[in-house]
Image 1: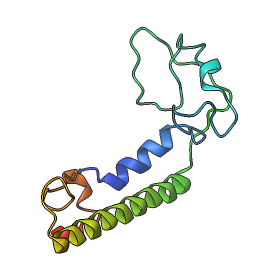
Image 2 (image 1 turned 30 degrees about the vertical axis):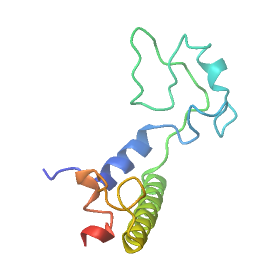
Image 3 (image 1 turned 90 degrees about the horizontal axis):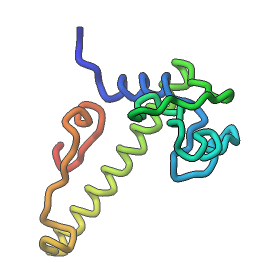
Length: 129
């Protein structure tokens, strides 16, 4: 069995999590469900993300919970990877520009950026190419 790639992992996660989840920084999901009301202000854990862990709390029941299909999850994962590549390219350009300007540590030029090892197979990291 081959190792799971970052793309495979993203696709798998998108197929088990709710398609309407917008993040806990928001009041409601895309389906209009209020997170605080759903969890009864912390009595239950959100069912939206299957990797949420809660000790001594059951997941709330949500009638709007719906996962993505394989095709939808694949498109979403590819979009996430593309956004990541654009971000890495912007960071690399800023790093290169700072180097040309002679900026030192603390001014955006001499440090190195840590990158997840499994990201290298899919993300183009210009300063490592």
